[in-house]
Image (cartoon, rainbow, N blue to C red; front, top):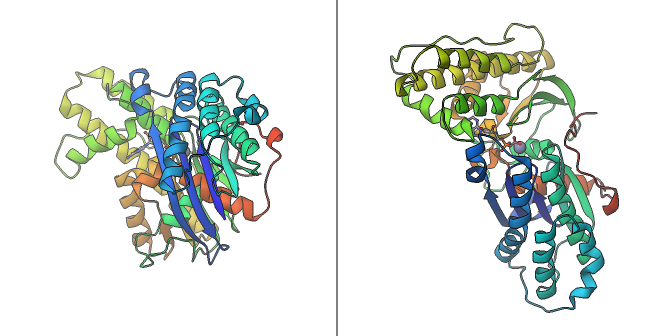
Length: 392
Ligand code: KG4
Ligand code: ZN
């Protein structure tokens, strides 16, 4: 089955084409085309993602990315047709004028590609941004008479980690072969900090979550306090790495909720503690590095302590980390070390850093598994849902 996927939930615009077959256990896939534009530079001056700006950028980027992904997949064939044939299909883009103009031109000059379904992120995320992708998918599906599979962005993070996460695997063929349940997922991104338990494939129970800021959001806000550009996670991580293992003078930050006895998190207090440190003394380069190091350690300590306790409590056989913050080297290596130290034999799956942050491959993979379950949606019933949940 060939799937074209569209992702626009935050500040990455992405389109991907995959060919996939099989079920969990004998799953196989090939990436035929994969295109992405990050808007990080566009949002950097605002210190975070600015929703209406994100919407405009998605509108501008989708057709060029569609063209690139189809071209990589060898599916781009010039063929002229009467654009009036597409006027009903394009009607859904009434509020995305620039996108409509570009798509009309594209449809009028290209043949329908050999695709079986379109997968699109419909939540969670920024609603104005999500709507651009949803309407684009609806227009394409109507123009090419294809079914649509609506995808939960967080399920995309789970599934791409399950597929690509095993660094010790000898297999050359990507696929989800040996997941043992219960599966525990630590989902850490700019919008989420959740521990989710799956007793079977694609079933989710929420075990714990942040009560205030997401951990990625805390990285971004702390970076901003120190005058570092957005996104802050990689910036803080870079500064911390420069002084990790040296005898730099330490700063003390709290480990919020580390002994709370439940699986919830809180990162707002940690950010406030950083603000106090920043305001107390002149922010030299040395001090920035010391703060970055202690903040990264504090965030990692809490995430890992709670995750290890959840592994024990629920007898998790596999643990998976997903979302942009799973690109963090210190969190990756400390969690791997903790699992080793506990001698639990739990299998750890973390995607390579380039697949940890938002992309359309994860949406294509989740879309494939949802399509296998027959979960297509009537195009006019799909609505962007900013607060969409993974669990019932
Ligand atoms: O999953 P993602 O790309 O988008 C959301 O769905 O939120 O995650 C983005 C978040 C940002 O907050 C970014 O600062 C953080 O992931 N991030 C990192 C690292 N790379 C990205 N945080 C810590 N260390 C990193 N290396
Ligand atoms: Zn994400």
